[in-house]
Image (cartoon, rainbow, N blue to C red; front, side):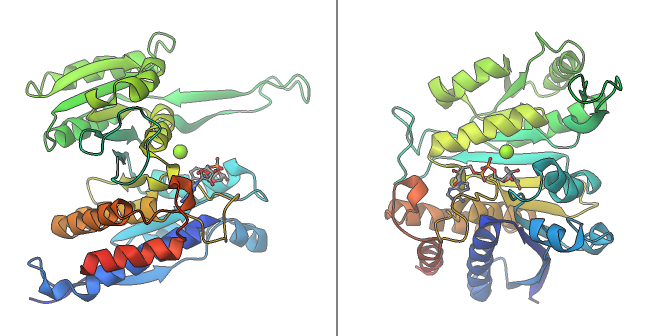
Length: 363
Ligand code: NAI
Ligand code: MG
């Protein structure tokens, strides 16, 4: 059979983004190099790297080129590092690049698995990598990150300023992310979806969310459900994580909960994420959950596992589940052998872990 080539746009952007994207590329290229031996046939990756980010902004006044979306739209996927640097206000860098891509490419489902890995110490009591495993499904197109509102609305100027930040909830937006969560739950051992809101305090958008959840749940009688308020859910992440399988929540709530989940698994550096356009009209984007980590950037300390796990999610998206599983096994073999970066208690460098991952692939 002919070699399948996947065209991937790499956007390392800022800080540790460059280090972890380089690691992910090296691991994926190693996987492709001996892909002929595999039952799914030969495949290759055709990378194109874009220099966008805060450094680019300082040189050009733009986070990405004006025709950037046009140039990205025909790629099979986008492999993203992290955006943000202390020299550029965070809302400028985030909206100028990452949120611009997510929103214009209608990547409305953000999938964020929480994996507990062998060899990584979790701060959770009795945490066990064979029992704990859940996925946060984040609504990624509206909610609290709709960008609705304004500043200085009352025209009172400095000292008396008034700002409004509104959240947008549409029935269509709620329903599609919930159906996505239920469909995902059906692929898992534990068929359960937990819906998260703060509908006791936010009586319009989040009550709509709750209503839609009840309606959608009726179509999935084989899937167990619960509705939990976000404050209670944050406690549940710590106290009863074994009761979680798929957790679906709005943009802001899921953003916070997935950081909590990855911290419980041992480090923010472990967490992977996929920003999916499930209709495949636009490229989907794969990135670690963490940011640019300015405190450790450029020192070879970044944990590449979040980025490499995101590459595994990209392989699944490409229809290569066996390869994704092979990569996930290599991650587990590496952590299980105690080859760990500093954030998870080890002393290995980014490069050491990357090399161990590649060796584990070929073992
Ligand atoms: P952060 O995720 O960059 O760092 C939080 C903590 O986790 C730091 O102590 C950092 O050293 C550690 N950490 C993060 N990634 C790690 C890795 N791969 N290996 C080991 N340790 C790691 O979040 P922070 O500090 O709040 O934000 C820094 C910048 O990143 C800001 O400009 C922020 O806007 C941006 N950001 C970007 C995101 C994205 O592009 N998706 C997501 C979150 C933040
Ligand atoms: Mg976050």
